[in-house]
Image: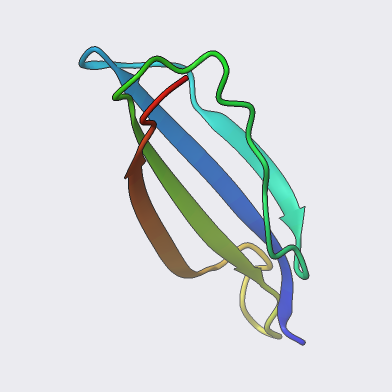
Length: 77
């Protein structure tokens, strides 16, 4: 009940170059996110970080509860 939202940041690296990142504000109850991968080339590296936004009295409302980091490869685009 102290989680007020989530912040998803996706980093995509193609041919050794970091492309623009994707940032999304998600609700506290979001359990999935669909991303259009049509613009991603084969063998790109994707890193997704999910940050939890907490609301605890006496603490600023924007607190990093934890960061979940996932890496995966796009096998075809």
